Amino acid sequence: RKEVEQDPGPFNVPEGATVAFNCTYSNSASQSFFWYRQDCRKEPKLLMSVYSSGNEDGRFTAQLNRASQYISLLIRDSKLSDSATYLCVVKGSYIPTFGRGTSLIVHP
Amino acid sequence: GAVVSQHPSRVICKSGTSVKIECRSLDFQATTMFWYRQFPKQSLMLMATSNEGSKATYEQGVEKDKFLINHASLTLSTLTVTSAHPEDSSFYICSAMERGGWTDYGYTFGSGTRLTVV
Image (cartoon, rainbow over the protein chains, first blue to last red):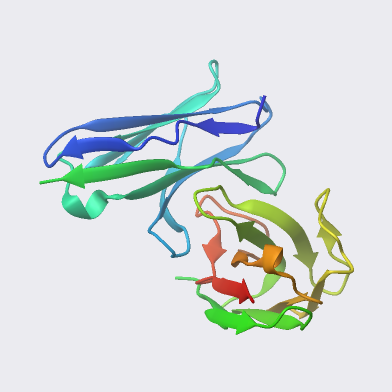
């Protein structure tokens, strides 16, 4: 089993839709969790950290389920500019492990 | 916020030559830098962890004699791809962790270097 797994997609959704991604991790000792966004041929950029209590930033909501070992990202009211690859990052000691990313395509 | 500068952004080189990629933390001290490689439609694969003043730790399957890493100061790490071959063509990205340990703010990435070996 891979350390961090994501559905690669692509997820094709219309503008205004709500879309959710999940990411599962195998190391129960993992301590920190992040969602990154990567545009084509660009470097990843931090979208948001994920806290046990769940956290929200505008249209984006991240949640962590330690019991089932997964994190999720919910995007509400999708915009065309949300089209990108979303990377799940899990960190145990101090080395982060990346998922392969989930591709999101928002169409008019 | 923290900024990491990576150069060059794009390089084309002939097979057999060496290429050096620089990664600088501009406004913070990076005790640890990570070097990743990403092939098209693949995830970021960690190649090595670079600690200032000590030898880099390479991931399994990464040839340390081929991918030379130097982290001579708290603001600069370099990756040299020696005797490059077409299969080394990839997107190389560095990431830095600030001195004092990681925070909940994630990692800062360089803008990446697209290497094409012809």
